[in-house]
Amino acid sequence: MFNKKSSLFPKKGRPQEKVLRELKERGSEDIRWQEGRSFAYIYQADKQLDNFVRQAYLHYMKENPVNPGAFPGLKQMAREVVNMAGQLFHLPKGGSGTFTSGGSESIFLAVLAARNRFQKIKPEKQAEIVLPSTAHPSFHKAAHYFGMKIRISPVNRSFQASAQAMQALITENTALLVASAPSFPHGMVDPIAEIGQVAAQHHIPLHVDACVGGFVLPFLKRGGVQVPDFDFAVEGVSSLSADLHKYGYAAKGASLVFFRETALRRKSFFAFTDWPGGLYGSTHITGSRSGGAIAAAWALMQHLGLEGYTRLAMQAWEARQKILSGLAKFPELYVLGQPQLTLFALASDQIDMYELADELSAMGWYIERQQAPPSLHFNITATHKKVAANFLQDLEKALEKTRKKNGSSFRQTLSERLLTGLHWLLPEKLFAKLRHQLVGLLPENSPQKPSAPLYGMTEPLKKTGNLEELIKDFLE
Ligand SMILES: Cc1ncc(COP(=O)(O)O)c(C=O)c1O
Image 1 (spheres, protein in one colour):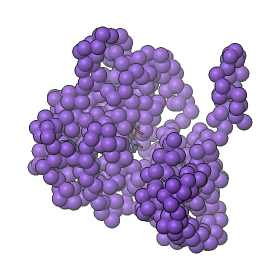
Image 2 (image 1 turned 90 degrees about the horizontal axis):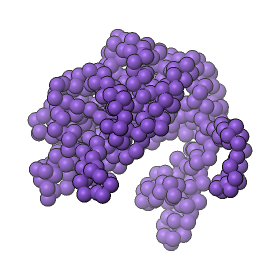
Image 3 (image 1 turned 135 degrees about the vertical axis):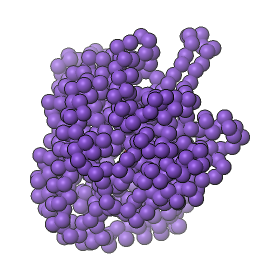
Image 4 (image 1 turned 30 degrees about the vertical axis):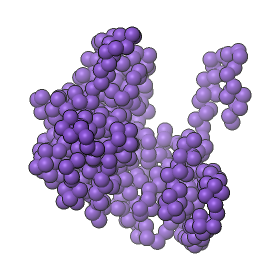
């Protein structure tokens, strides 16, 4: 399908229609999200709404909010989006927010502000973050970039953070506490009120990561679903991230970060005055970016209003209920914890979940694999309401096939033992070569590629300290 020639810079250009046709073909092996067959990466309501978002995005695609003064219309739209969402999250007077390119950037800015606040007080110490084991990896990434140390707090049997366990990890160097609303892996909202109390007692900022839940929790509540408080209404919450490009159904490149006190946000700003190119100031990690994401988010919020968002949240909720009640038919499967929103993880003590995922992938569904314990991750969005029954039928078929593959756990044990044995036997260089070969097992080129063999090997690789290197081999 791929035209190998086009990886060479063409000497002569090609007609636009031909290029566009080929560009479209390039997506033919992608996950089939347009049909509602992906439970990851894509947040979709319906085609008509997507087209509206696309139009708004294209209108401001070339504009560059890196200099808001040059595009006052975009600046005003970003400000309005921040204000509208600020009301949703009970941001008090004196607080402020920033429109960012995604959850990771929102988290980076919150972590940076907390680190800079800490460094001002204790410049000679290394700042630390206390977070639950279920917190998103972008906090670890931020700590890696900003030279901070992470202290990981275990979660309870329901995969929820424990305020007590987090308190026990606080030291004189703690610069930030983190809680999720909800955590991505299990859809569990951490006990924000309790963690907020700990934060307030110790005068440490608390960041609530509502990247995935921020634009569904308030609307489920409006729709009559009981959900916990998670935002600035809770004492002790000092910053919060919420992604418009997740349950806000906006175009990718749209997230918000809020600070209870504007003075804390300011600590994430950057200014440089000695550049011959002029005076430089930045509120973001990114530099140039498209204005499209701001325009699309603004347009969608104006179009849907609180009522429209509530309708979409309840549509996703109905799909979630339909799938969860359908799962009751399969006694070997169970949901981890007691997820309160529209995302959850499915596990089993009897069958190999990675084999099950591979069977579903072969049928055209896309589901994320998780670990500790092996589980499958479901992000239910409004579009899944129409495919829920279909999915349950396919799940039944996939389960039947997986049950028949009883040999897989034996195979897995064998491959684990083999790998551990090889690690002891082979010189380091040779083992690195073998690890490099394993990269071929990663699903780079096709979402349909089986992942069970790879996941069978992660434990021994982790034990021998080779898993991180395998991931970097893959990235390379
Ligand atoms: C809870 C949570 N936080 C942060 C992020 C990072 O968001 P992004 O991928 O937009 O950078 C995600 C992404 O899924 C998430 O689920």
